[in-house]
Length: 225
Image 1 (cartoon, rainbow, N blue to C red):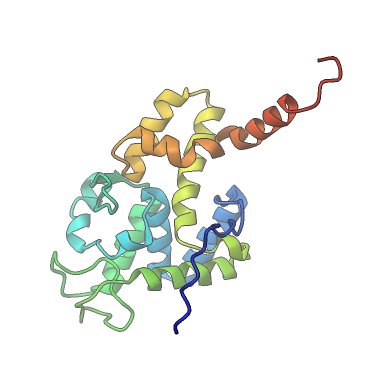
Image 2 (tube, rainbow, N blue to C red):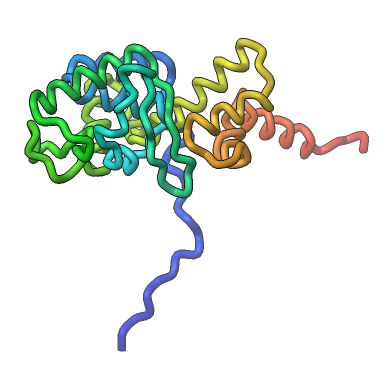
């Protein structure tokens, strides 16, 4: 008689609390990507600035960059019900993307070609895009080269890092949270600022730690009570 499969009633604890790269770690990762080559420089820069998920990298095609030279924007197709839209990029990312496109497609360029082709189908002979697993391997390799801790060597860390860097910079400049969150939601493709609040508000300005300290204080025994 077959034994019944065991049902896990208690979820696994989180592997680590950190979800964001520090400014120093991000600069080291970007430097490692630029040293690695034009593809990695363009990939890491765009993933950070547009808050890309690993699966969204494979959706990018050359037609998404038709306005890159003139307007410095890239069209991002979002997953998980996100809002697809044109995303502004910096001059450095624009340059990195243009250098990569010229290197990957020196002659034949049609709009239906993937922006980041798979490594086995390179130099114009393209039918498939870079998979999410290939993106994860690239991020892990670059994080290792940049001496970033292993727990942070995953693609989604770049998305979290982009959000928190914007929020941190906004708070330092005195911008109110009700202005910051809609802007962040637009950058990362959330349909509503409430999604941004749900995912990230506990990490902003040490809110999580403040809540823990407040709870500890309120739950103390009061000998005078």
